[in-house]
Length: 482
Image 1 (cartoon, helix red, strand yellow):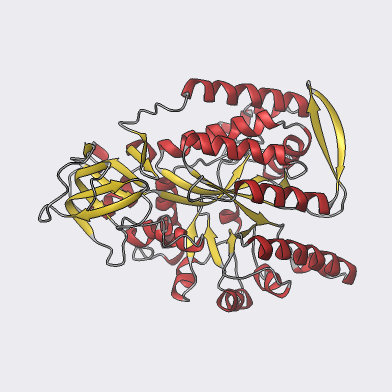
Image 2 (image 1 turned 45 degrees about the horizontal axis):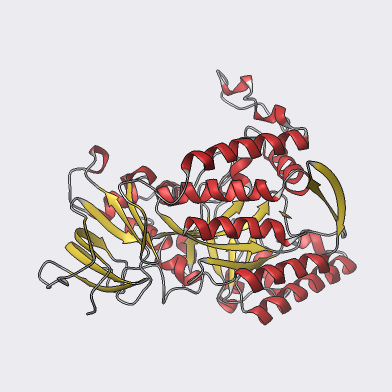
């Protein structure tokens, strides 16, 4: 073995490799951006590493992968106070009418900082959301997000695509805080997507990537023949671009027959990751088996309250299921340990059986299964020689993680984002002892607060940041929808 740059020693390695080895008092050698070796105390480690990190009392595990989240939401996460319809309205008002490149950059920096501190090293995130509002009228907004990713050192696959018809869609752009409305065609949105793909799609080396997305359609949307043709033409155009550029494809909000419809529209394949996917039909299962598409389960999301993603049944059917945060949002952040715990309890409660989704399987959903869904299984998702050195160290010497023993159980059930001590991405130490040297934390927080305030003022919705009196004393929140 060549002289490693970094040698991790005295860790408990939860490898998630093919044998699912858990190695006590393990060492890992890192050379450049790769894992150069891994062994137990019975194996002789390299002698002359340039840097030695003593991981006594810590678990080393693969960097966590969040397969579904939303750029923009981090600065809108409190608005609406649990009123889902109002939340969608705020997202549209902010994203399409009141956001600037500075808004998207500030939000990305905030989300990346939260992810880094929580051990999330790779994420797929949509450039917007709410009611399918994607900020793809100009590449400036995607550039702002990807530039922040490159500075943070994490990996982000930014999903971009068209909004729903009718077209053209109206967006507002700002120069010197003066807004002007711009009408954007479907064709222009695809041009922006292609531009972003050409300049940013290199997630393994530059650590930014770009995927394509389009809205989810349901049977009621395409009853009319002309509506079906419009949606089919839209899907064909997105798929033609996807095939030409060989990128991933994702959709947000599948349910109750929509996966079968997506298959019939020709937008599914092994390149596709489908978010939420609740209340699936037998036809949906058949479509997944036929196409090889993967499912992103978001157990903490509001959509998982409205319906249930049948995760154990999907896994038993041989379908890849990965985990997503659906963050940031009014009631959830990027803590993937929290989402793992929520996942286990969510399905155990459904079956009234605590044997469902054991801790190891749930960790797989946020590591190796997620890497498989992203087409990156040969590079990420486990601690193995030759793979990218994306490694997080969890400080287990804490009361809620003691006594020692059963490391997989302790990780999945009791750990949280604040237990992450060290984060290594691409062989570079980005956080050590929870200290981050290359990012200005205070400036990130101050910028986020400033850009949120400006965006809410432009949209005229500052009142939505006030918490309602019905937070207290009542069994149910009173919203405009009730």
